[in-house]
Image (tube, rainbow, N blue to C red):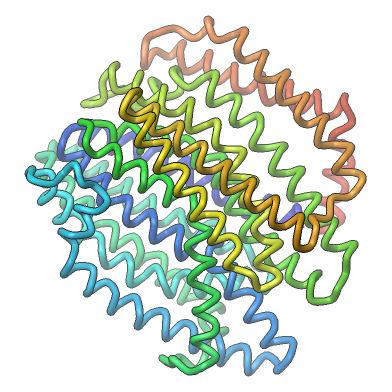
Length: 510
C-alpha cells in the first residue's frame, strides 16, 4: 500500500511543482489586477471540475462498484458496467458543458458577486466559456483513471495530469516571449485549458485502460441511477477543499486583488495536500474496499493506521514549514513582473492562515475512505456541507475586519469542522481501527514535527529580503533541506520510523 502511495505521491508532486511554475508564470503574465482576477475566478471552475471528477474523487463510487461487479459477475460484466459508466458520464458532461455556457454570466455572478456591474464580469465570462471544453474531456479521463486504480495500476494515473500543466506552461511561455496584451493573453490561455484536457484523454485512450470499458453505451437504467446516486455525493465531498476556496473567492471578490492573493496562497497549500490527499483517495479506497468486503479486521486496521501515520507525518511538518517560511517562499515564487511586494505580503499572510487548516484537510482525506469502502458517500457529503457553512460564516465575519487573511482563517476553520464531524460519526458507527503501532508512533511524529518547526523559526532571520537574489534561493533551499533532514533524523531517534526497514520492505514488495 505504501509503495502505491509513494507512486501516486511522486506523480502528484511532479504535477504540483509544474503547477507552481505555471502559476508563477501566470503571476508574471497577468499580475493581480482585473484581468488576473477575471481569469483566476474562471479557472476556479476548472479546478472544481478537476476535484469533482479527478484526483481520486470518483474512486469513492466507481472503484467499490466496479470491484463488486467483477467479483460477483466476472470480468466481462465489469467491462460492460464500465462501458456504461464511461458512455453516460461523457454524454452527460457534453450536455452539461452546453448548458453551463448558456448561463455562464449567472454562474460567474454567483461565484464572484463583487464583479457585478464591472468589466471584470464580462472578462471572467469570456474566459470561463473558453475553458469549458475541458469539462467534456475530464469525465472520460477520470473514468479511465479510476479503472486503472481499481486494478492497482497507479503509475499512469499519477503522472498523466502532468500533461495539463505542460500544455499551459508552453502557452504562457509563448505569450511572455511575444509580449501579448494581458486581456488577449488571458483568452488564449483559457482556450489552452481545453486543449490540455484533450491531450490527457488521448494519452489514456492509447493505453489498455480503454479496453476495460467496452462496449461503450449511454444508459440511465436502474443500475446506473444507483451508481450516480452514490457517485455524486462522494464527488462533491471529495472536492471539499476546492468548495471552501470557491466560497472564499466569492467573499473576496468584493476586495480588489483579494481573489488573486487567496488563489496564489492556496496553490502552496495544494502541494502537500495533493501529495497526501490525492494519494489517500487513490490508494486507500480500493485497499479498504477489499478489506471490508472480506471482513478482514486486521487489514482494515492496518490500512487505517498507516493512513493516519502518513497523514500526520507529512501534514504536520508541511503546516509548520509553510507558516514559518510563508513570506520568503511567496517572494521567491511569485514576486516578479506585475506581482509586487505588497502582493507578496498579503499572499503570505493568507498562506499562514490557510496552512492552519492543512492538517484538517488531510485528516478528511484519511478518514473519508473508511466511509466510501462501506458504500457510504452521504456522511462525507454532510461533513463537507457543515464545514462549508462554518467557513462561509466565519469568512464573512473575519473578512470584514481582516480582509483576505480573515477569509483564509474562516476556510481553515471550515476544514477542521468537516474533519471533526467525520471523526465523531465514524467513531459512533463503526469505530476507526487504530493499531498499537500507530498509537505509539503518532505522539512521536507530533514531537518531531514541532522540533523541526522550532528549528525553522530560529533560522528565519537568515533569509535576505531581496526577492530574487541567488543568496535568497540558496538560503531558503538550505533551510528547507535542513528541516527535512532534522525531521527524518528525529523520527528515527524517537522510534517513529525505521528508514532501513522501510527501504527493505519496499524492495521486498517490488
